[in-house]
Length: 282
Image 1 (cartoon, one colour):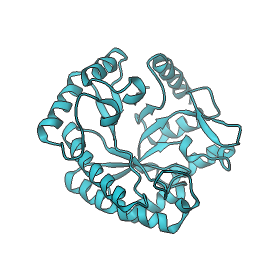
Image 2 (image 1 turned 60 degrees about the vertical axis):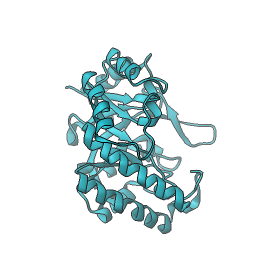
Image 3 (image 1 turned 30 degrees about the vertical axis):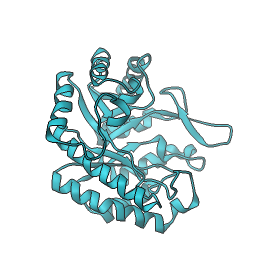
Image 4 (image 1 turned 45 degrees about the vertical axis):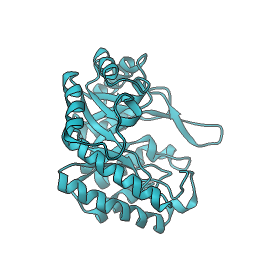
């Protein structure tokens, strides 16, 4: 069965010329990407305020000529930043990315849900009601803009962020109450030192609570570091139960786009082959 694998552009090549990026994507037969404009493209100025229909059309033509579709336009902000000036600036940047997404036909603009710390440190305040309400305060005008533009916002839950569990994601989806909000599922990001041994139950709960809202997946692996915490690992080299996760995808999300994280040009093809084999057998 066909699987729509892809990767993040900034994992494939260092920030450089847009034409060089498109060439690399074609050479590696990558058709679906997560694109963070300022992380990946150096010869175009995407500063806030520079958006125009002409600039967006320029990017769109480059993508179409290369046969590349943007599954996620990355604009990962800290929507719970306690620094009000910085929070407002990130909101402005995000809304501009919604306009780019509409123009280039991206499936969504993606973000995580932040921490209650200006420097993005892990702090207890992130897990409080105060932080959650701050998230809603930020997201409501962003969602309003997305609805007006006809664009989707993809929200990614992370165990150390404001939406730290499947239950919190479900609460957020209920509270924000918009068809223009969908979920980017990074299964590893839902795990921490307390629940990784029950990873299957965590994934089952996510699908039970909001499986209908999951529309893109991030794929990686994990290990347990010397401190007992969940840490990144390359595809197939860690503890993730891919077979269980892919059974859920097969049952509830056929043909979902899977974006492989932290892959690279040397291993992307073998990562895809490894994942495809497990998917076929799941």
